[in-house]
Length: 226
Image: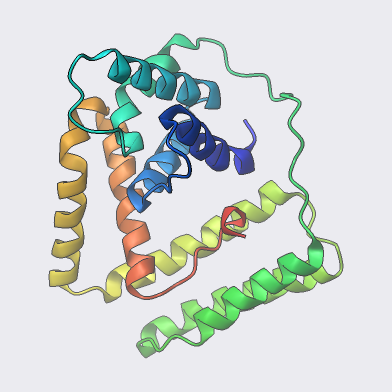
């Protein structure tokens, strides 16, 4: 599966299946897509699960509300994933997306500037500075068209982001952590029965990580957000 196509293809497929024009996914939906990606759910399984969910919904005599979240499709996605016994061939015919080196350099530098501009307690300052320094190093490589493999770059960005999230989480007060978890529980409650324990744990981590970044206005570093 192509990492960079995974997110956008799921969003577009959900929009087509919903059939109501442009529909923007929520942060909860993006966290769920990240959960599926990290769990290794094949893209075909997600597509099939979305289609089955809408087919069953449309077959109902009484429709209480429109499907407004990918979480509604979670059970069908897991069922479709189990049906796929053989791993997908790595050669799917999809081309790795092309990135303009200069635009990538600007992206890295912009994120570095945002991180450096944050006011943080002194004990976390080193993490912020080291993250910005690494991003500037990637920017220089981009300007020289010497970034190399994008998946390796993405792995490096993931490490940088995880360090930022760890620092941000430690800065949250007890009240903020409780509020974030309560918000997550409220959104997730209707769908708990549709997800496995492992996927729930991963989903919770992804959601709380995202909340930490949003609380402190920190940028997402992944190439997906480029």
